Amino acid sequence: MKTKQETRPSTSERILSATLRLMSEKGYKSVTVKQIAAEAGFSEMTIFRTFGSKKAILDRLIENYLYTPPNEKMIRDRLTYDLETDLLMLSEFYHDTVGATEQIYLLSVMERSVMPDLHVNIHHNATKFTDIVADYLKTMQERGLVVAGDPLVQAATLMYFNYGKFATYTLIPRADRLNNLRDAVAVIARGLAA
Image (cartoon, rainbow, N blue to C red; front, top):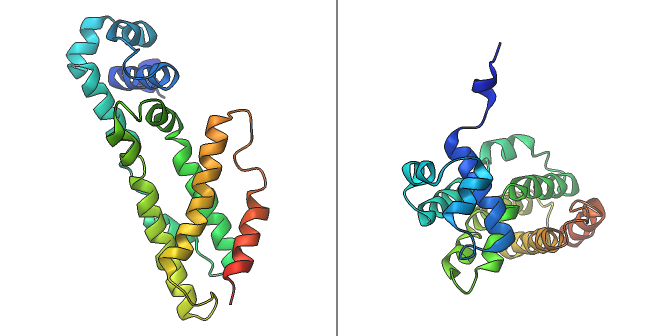
């Protein structure tokens, strides 16, 4: 049986979570260590002891939320080689994965002029994911199930759609991100089918 202490988030997790909430609402420059401490329920000294600086907290957030590539094995195990089914699964997987980076994305939009590297780095996983989709489409072309063409361009089309859907629904939080996903993917699948 787990005790309360075992299930409670660690000090660093609470600080990261509080920082992410505050920075995605107010921006990096507007948030102070004092505000982070209050939001996390710690003293400023605890924040400095745990991370050293506000910049170090941001660096850890970026590391934790942006550089976790999609699980290729899990994706490959779920492939059926039915184009529409697989494109829907890949799209849903993408939205599940990037859903965890929603607040980082908002921060990158707010701070794009101050920290342009953050805005560029947020696309790291999208690039990796696009490569996975391109490999899949190449295999589907080899099987004669997808029209001939550059698999990377074909994959990018699906990913541009998904990224646009993610960005739109992140900026309009009351909307349902997965709304009409099945219908939109069916249109893309029809365009790619051989």
